[in-house]
Every structure is written in C-alpha cells, then in structure tokens.
Image 1: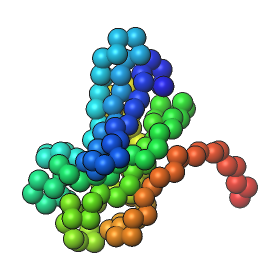
Image 2 (image 1 turned 180 degrees about the vertical axis):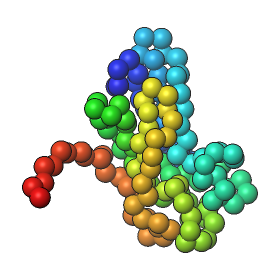
Image 3 (image 1 turned 135 degrees about the vertical axis):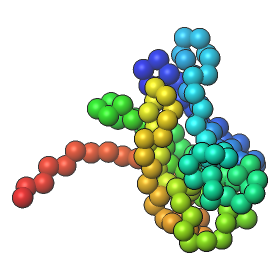
Image 4 (image 1 turned 45 degrees about the vertical axis):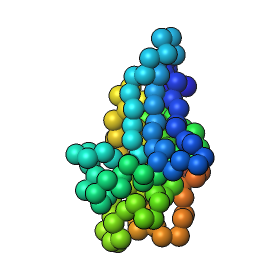
Length: 138
C-alpha cells in the first residue's frame, strides 16, 4: 500500500501472459491505473515484439514491488517472456528481466533497467529491490 493506493500485481501460475500492475483506491476500490510490463502496440518498446506475440509474452512480476518515499517511486522486477514470444535478436530492449521504476500516483514508467539483455537463460529478476544510502569517502 502506498498512500491511499493498493498496488497489486496480476500473476496467474499457468497463464504466462499475466503482465499487469494495478493500483486501486483504498477507499473506493476503483482502479486508478494499470501498467503493462509488456508494452502494447504504440507504447515504448512495443516494436521489440513480433506480430501479436505481446499478447502471450509474459514478463511477469514474481514478487511484490517496493517503495521509496524520498523519490515517490515504486520499483517492480520482472522475469523473462516466453522465448517464442520475442524477436530472436540481441538488441531487444527494455522488456524483460528488468526493474521498472513507476510513479505510484500515475502508474507512468519513470525509468527501467534491464539486468540481462537478450536473456536466454531465464535469469528472472525475482528479487524485491533493496535500497540503501551509502556514504563513500573520497
């Protein structure tokens, strides 16, 4: 829960196209926003999916996200898509095995980091992101 929002990830064990993060108003139960971990046509990164493969693509969030109060950012990690659902090219961008930083008020992507580009070994990003302040002397 962040502020008055309940954030949930949609994950169905046997249906790998689950790729949704939703935020609901805690008082009214109305959905405030939805974020797709696999972009739909026209969204940034959608050109990295062949045809309609994005519909079955995967990139599920395996664990609950985390929240940084100082930056008002929620972070979610995802796994890889089904191997047959993506182009077979090393330059594939921003879709899988990544950490997505979202604005919890709007659900908009602030930034992302892809841990393993062209991941063919199932190195899912299944860890809850941990953040720390580290002071380094120069």
